[in-house]
Each structure stands twice: as structure tokens, then as C-alpha cells.
Image 1: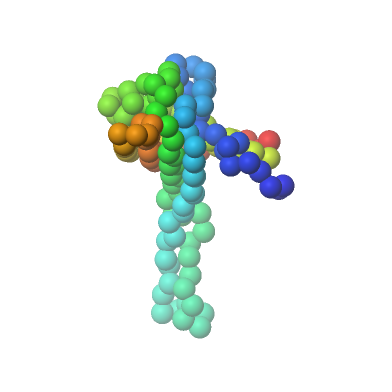
Image 2: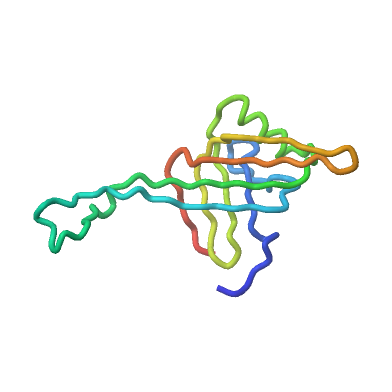
Length: 137
């Protein structure tokens, strides 16, 4: 994978529930992480006392976070409404020259900030709420 611009990592939200994805407006920084819990099956009979893990048994999750400037665009409005309604709609994360991750997410936090001499900014966090699908680019 070649070096990529950070601005090419996009978080998109399904605006209408029919696969109409639009980039969340104003984002300047984005981050996605994947996690898998391990299931320890170590016993007194484990070879040499080494820990043993049960493959494929842990809970998988993904977390997305982003920060940027408030634009009051359709995608900002949709993201706010998702939070207040407690919905878990489809989001997409586009990772350039790697792939697209798509699945349901819950908006777990939205923070707004601003100073008297600067722009209004926001930060948002999302947690996976179902199966993630990966499509290679």
C-alpha cells in the first residue's frame, strides 16, 4: 500500500436508509480501530504452561472517531439525529487503496466546542452495532 493522504480516509453515513452514503461534512481527522476479544482456554494441561486461545471465539468490534469543523450540512444533521434517536444505521469507512468497511454503527458521543475567535468544531465517536463487511478496492 502506497503512502496516502489522510484526507482520503472518509467516514460516510447513509442519509436515507437506502444506501445513499454521503461523507460526514467538515471532518479534518478520522480514525478507525478494530478489536477482537480473546477467549482464554488455558488449563493445567497446556503445553509448557503457555496460554492457549480459542480461535474465532471472541467478540469483534470496530470504533470510529473523527473531529472537524461544524458545517451544518445534511450529513451533520443526520449524524445528530442518529444520536438523539438512538439509531444504528449503516456507515461506510473508505480506506484509500485498501478497502471499504460498511456496517451499522451507533453514534456514542458528539462534542461541540468553539472559541470566541475561532470556528465551531466537533468530535464524534461511533461504535459498531452489527456485522462489518469489508470490500477490497
